[in-house]
Length: 88
Image (tube, rainbow, N blue to C red):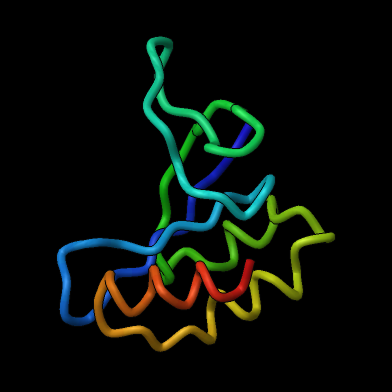
């Protein structure tokens, strides 16, 4: 089971995503929507106003990575994508 936290980018229609299980985004497959990394089924999408709910399901091993995700101040998709590539 995965829950996806979505954060909008201020100058873009795109949203940053962080799954509760792996910290990845979602992926559509023939059977539905899953976590892009571990393929756990996505059961819910939440935004920052439901952060407490999301944190109940966040894998504790991802806390540091999640904090970096929340601190990200990217304004558009290109800026966010470039930061993600540099982190790997």
